[in-house]
Picture 1 (cartoon, rainbow, N blue to C red):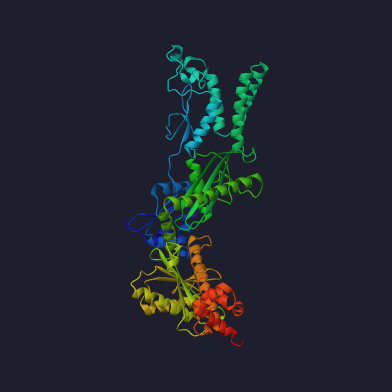
Picture 2 (spheres, one colour):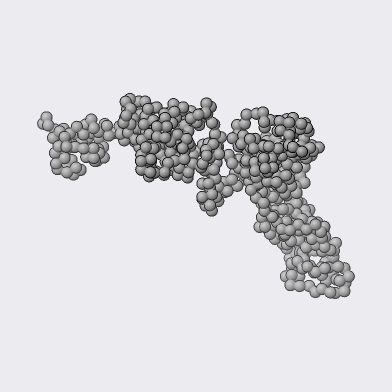
Length: 598
């Protein structure tokens, strides 16, 4: 059956909750999305004007639409997440980590062993986790082993085998790390009582274990078994120390998941804190790569579903910094103050630290990857045909209409290349005319690069609005470079990016790294131009006095001013003092010029 046109496919979609899938002409998956109303949501892609360039590109590629109707928005959210992970569509948010996380296993045995593992086997054993690192598991295991004596052997401790005396206690028993259930020295009931307490500790509930140990300590003390009482007291101290380290909020806050997000133009970072009895028992951050300029709410929703599935969270309530739609069975709380707000702020801080660490690691471990990421982002943000590895920015300086000059600064791979900066005296323009001056310097700059067969930049930035940009474009036209080099203008007031052929400016995200690099270029060009302008004005001021003396040039004038600091001090200087700076002959010329009336 022939595929119907897109508009027919859209019109015939149901108005039910579900998941939609976009495919290109080769039937490759482009995008998976969820919707409360499939028809309304999909139709919006084809009727709205999209601010995002990437959405526009995707829409042009769509040739086929498929959909799956589900019972509720929650089902749609879960299905969307599963399909994204399975199909990995080109334009969907991408999860950046896919690790095998460690678990703590309580083995299904008569006398259960407790050990770490990365493999979850469906054999009836209990698995707690996953944890974010094996170090966390070992820390918890060390705590458990310090409190309770558990077996580590793999023997089959069936009752008949123990009664038959098949096993003998090992070194662990003699070291006090095991109570010898293999020879019947510990009852099954007592061993399972310890396992029950271990379950509670793993869940973050230390209350029952503390009560048990305090009762034991009291009993030993009453029987004057002071060494045993001291041993139990040490266990209580270990448990309380571990608990105090992890307690950060009100102990009444129990069985709650906390989520927050920070983002930039390319990535979202969703942090997860799991709380039990006021203690953080887990913290994890995932990195989400944006594909279609997704907002924080959408990324946070995706992150919450992914993390709760990954860590098998059973919490019925979540704390978040903004309202999210993640299903009717989950209570969503957006705290405004108090302990709940503090824990959301802590989660946000963790997400920020994670983002900073990622950038630091990228710069250290793979600086080229960091540059590639920024250059790829600039290419995307500024709608360029190639990455702007070489950028040049121009600025005019003619303060109060005097001494008109211009500056050209050069950035390579997003960083200043100061040895390639160039300054220009305006030669062909009379008076303060920014447009004509810009045309002159752009023409001179690229005529020289062409004549010397030097590489041209991939991007030119003009500090100014449409007028200066048009003048620069005219210079490129005259050189036959129009269309061969991308060129934009940046207006100071609202940081508007102008293109030669576009009526409306582009506004980049204020947090965008692309905008920060453009601002750095513009500020460097302005600084470099102003410095040159000041030097020229100083030189002009020198010329009115010292350079009017026959035989005295700019170099001598500068040396005198550097030493004496002002014209008036040069005038009143003794001949010998002048001689020490510029020699006998030139000192005589200066001295006689200022003292000829005497």
